Image 1 (cartoon, one colour):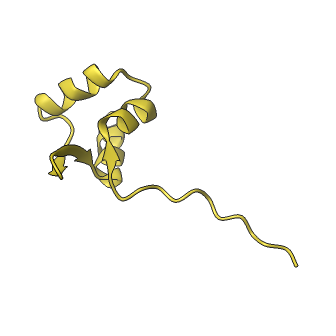
Image 2 (cartoon, rainbow, N blue to C red):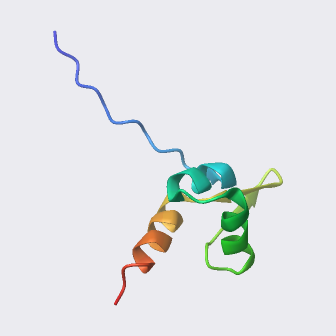
Image 3 (spheres, rainbow, N blue to C red):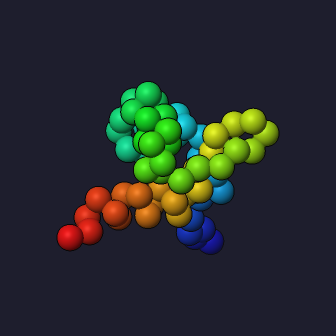
Length: 65
């Protein structure tokens, strides 16, 4: 029986270090994006988190004419 391999599920929330890895930027530059309100965030358990859909919207905004 052949099993299909599902793509890796994306987490519900991303931490700053994960966002930095995805954007290929330093954690400091991601924190700057957060501090200047360019990237929408929240806090869960005292940690700054980003929803994947908010990260996608941030990336897409870079392509708007």
